[in-house]
Length: 91
Image (cartoon, rainbow, N blue to C red):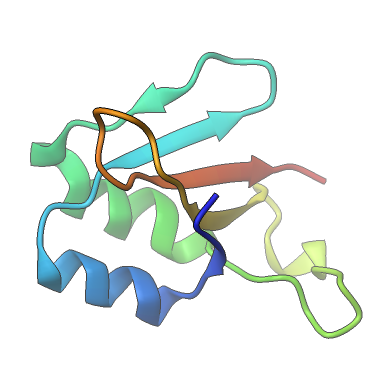
């Protein structure tokens, strides 16, 4: 992992700078690589409303995210550039 806990501003800046490869990690399911053509819709509809970071007490108040929340991090994957990995956490 190159960078843990990307903020909304971090991801928006990355989207402005060039293609962002999102990878969704949910529980025991296989990784879901989001098509580059779908990145903006995926960001706006799926990620942005649920993106958060751990608070000062190293916790997230899950009442704010009844459908689960997303933590984003930047990874280095050989042959795939620098994907943004999205870990979905359910209460």
